[in-house]
Length: 231
Ligand SMILES: Nc1nc2c(ncn2[C@@H]2O[C@H](COP(=O)(O)OP(=O)(O)O)[C@@H](O)[C@H]2O)c(=O)[nH]1
Ligand SMILES: [Mg+2]
Image (tube, rainbow, N blue to C red; front, side, top):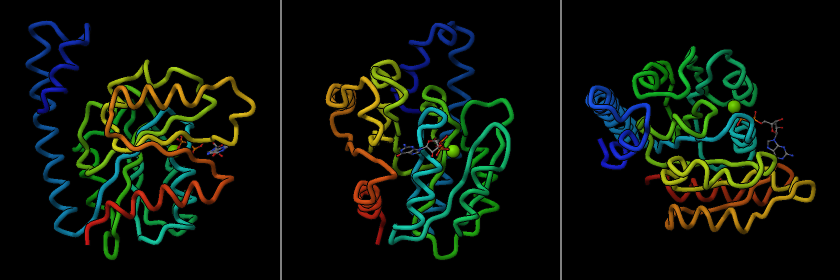
């Protein structure tokens, strides 16, 4: 388990009593071992795994739908939601190989849930596998799901200060996407200030602005991903 994960537990008033810390530590240690197995499986098959995390509705599935039209790499998707197969179906409608995991009441995916998705995902010819995590800016950040990179999305209509309010999530980000920037004229939103907040929390995170109305912005996301594909 990473030191930062233990720090997160210790800083959480619900989890930091003497009885709970060893239990949570054990759960995360088991999870991380399974996540390493998943990463190895994908590496053995030359597939780069990317975990998408954000609040519900910030544009994860929409981004994947658009990437299916412009990306010059083949990708599959493991979808995580509490209920329904809707997001996986949206992607299958676009010709993308996609498997839905229903978490029931769990607010995040863990490596054991992802393992079940992986078992049903046909990976022939894939270069990238996205894991669309459950919409939530808190819980998914604590669970390694076997990804190589984390992309965190935050949309303009969610309002300012999300980065500073949910630092654990943004510290995990390799790329932060500010989504729905076409809506900037309609919101009081200081994008520069929010970008600076990202840089303070995670100085080496890349940052991109995205709008589905601007194909060039989507191409930049595809290029960032293409740059992380092995071979
Ligand atoms: N205006 C605008 N709306 C967007 C953009 N991206 C996504 N949306 C809308 O945001 C809503 C939620 O998107 P969805 O992809 O389902 O979010 P998810 O829960 O993160 O997967 C949908 O109605 C999308 O059409 C964007 O760039 N601009
Ligand atoms: Mg979705």
